[in-house]
Image 1 (cartoon, rainbow, N blue to C red):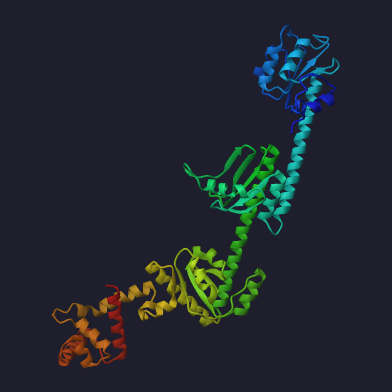
Image 2 (cartoon, rainbow, N blue to C red; image 1 turned 90 degrees about the horizontal axis):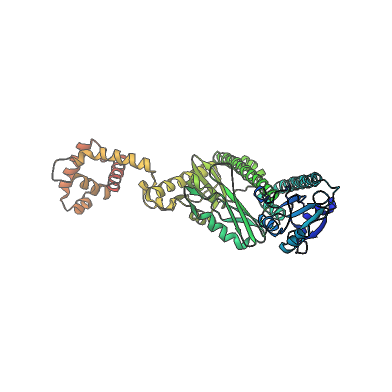
Amino acid sequence: MPPSLQTVVRRMGLRPLAGITGRGALNAAVRWVAVSELADPTPYLEGEELLLTTGMRMEGDLSGYVARLVARGVTGLGFGVGVSHEQTPAALVTAADEAGLPLLEVPRETPFIAIGKAVSELLAAEQYEEITRAFAAQGRLTRAALKPEGMHAVIDRLAKEIGGWAALLDEAGEVRHATHGAQDVAAELARLRRLPEPGGSVASLALSGPGEHIVVQPLGGGARPRGFFAVGAKQAFPPVVHTVINAAGSLLTLSLEQGRSQLAAVRRVRSAVLELLLAGEGERARAVLGPLGGRLPEEPLVVLAAGADALEALEGHGFAALHASSAVALVTEEVAEKAGQEVDGPVGGSLPCGYGETSLRTGLDQARRALEAARTRGDGMTWFRKLAGQGLLGLLDQSAAQAFSAYSEALLAPLTGYGSRVDLVESLRAYLDSNGHWDAAAQRLGVHRHTLRYRMKRVTELLARDLDDPGVRAELWLALEATQRHR
């Protein structure tokens, strides 16, 4: 804060004459000292100055002169005696008293320039003190940032430094941590953060109202904020407080970036741990994971597979890592269903398995097959056990199923292109579904068994395959199933 008029009076030995009876009159700030003998110096003033004059042109009614100074916001008027006037004009004293303008008498031996120097020194000392306070506050904020609580500790410290409240918000504007006094405005801040702004989202806010001043600033070094923090107080923020707020913003951004870097490093370690588990190196995997404070779920476990963007959602339920562009989680059976439902997108779940190399790899394969099925059908959580109940073809992934379907159409093409009224494909299906029993198959088709024998002989000739071979019959049955599913 600039020095008060009272401070200048005491330091320079000035004598108050009028306009000092009002409450706090001498507590007004002096931001500069101006000297003028003009009849109307106000065009050259900004307000909050201590104006000094010897009254060279003062005579008659001086109420207009004083009124103009008051309207301009002058802090006080200093009258130098012993030059143009041996004493301060009574008209000036009366006008100043009536207008409430502090009028000070400057002794002949006190140079105006000395008053200007004194105010400049006081202003410089105040600025130095503000800088010192700002550095001290930055030191306390830095020490807070080094605490285990990290960003939360910075928010708590910031509230104390500004004499108000502070809050930490995430990317969506939802309050994640707030000090006392911020609860009443938390919902309003979140609402304001969601308001659209022409050309993009709101990045920062400054709100002022009766007894409440709020500033919201973005966090993060990129084009898109990764979070926000807000501060509020009953009084307006002076420059030194803005300096402290900006310092807190830098520390919060640094903590945020460091936190993300550490998280990325931890996730890389988890991916390496998963590779060790898949290689059957369970003990080594636990040795690597231990220093991170992580634990593996007890057997039996379930493997979940989802898109890479689902990693954060899965991390809260068990061991999760990225593997081959997918998010993979190892969870207990008890939490598997809940974990899968919290993922915004398709998820595949395996049958219960263990940590043995073969068992875990099988579980991962099952989870990925279930994930592929979920993506194909547009489902959310899909379990491998449900695929197993849909037959052998249901276990094929999408690319394999499409490839086998194309192969099946080519395999059966001689039958589908047969230029007779006889449906050899349906005859072959009836024969295979009846396990090669002629009577049962003929009855199913409504034909004589000798007719069916003739048809099967024709099928054998067109396909150049031996229907007595169990492998041939299995291949043809799968081909019929594949073509029927993709019609």
